[in-house]
Length: 285
Figure 1: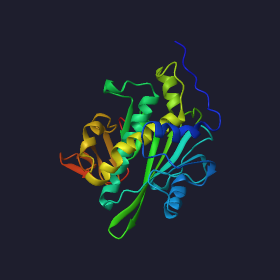
Figure 2: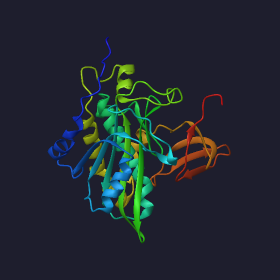
Figure 3: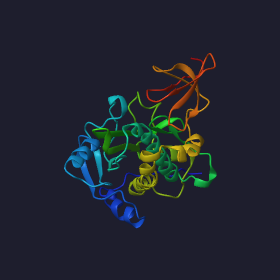
Figure 4: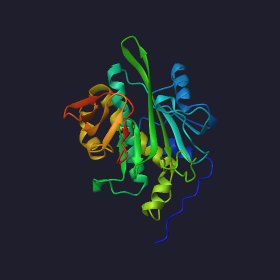
């Protein structure tokens, strides 16, 4: 059957975000700041927080000159092809809760990507997965990443900034990223998913905001126990051989109720990893 080709939307498609968010009764997505270019939406959000911006304020940009992910990595993007945004959450909490928020955010992004792919939410299994601690994969390629930053005052977190980059339309990648990255549009082309439907960046963003609105505050106050079953269902690493500086080499055995990655080592012991970089070990390596 013919594959659906999605074209890049005209400028201004993101202006509908606040309207859509209000229609769904969300507390996030307003005020909405949309810019053609910025250094970093996370930096914009942090500056906004210092200036008194309210809970739920959202910054979106077509291009980030200094967009970054975890470990200070840069984010590849072409104007109009990605969804680059940051959300300010004014939820006082313990600093110990912040790392697990990245998992809840990753799950919200995963759900939005799955919906954009045209998947049935009731189907259970999905090609969109959460890769601990903060990435979203489709067909084992990265489609989105999350960066959570917080401001601590005394012993409490004053506010949190959730930054996210989602590859929506991108089909051309630098050589070094081609085996590693994908986009929602490319994944739909490859799998024949979502035929007959257009991609809407505003709708994808609002779906992410809905997930954050539903889960973020609860996670910051109580942890991720209520999300554990869904995280387990959509865990990209479970049962796979992984390696990392903090663990050496082992087999991923899932995410525990504290948001830590459980890794079974060669001697049979299971280690719970709270933070760090984990890579899937190539077959035969």
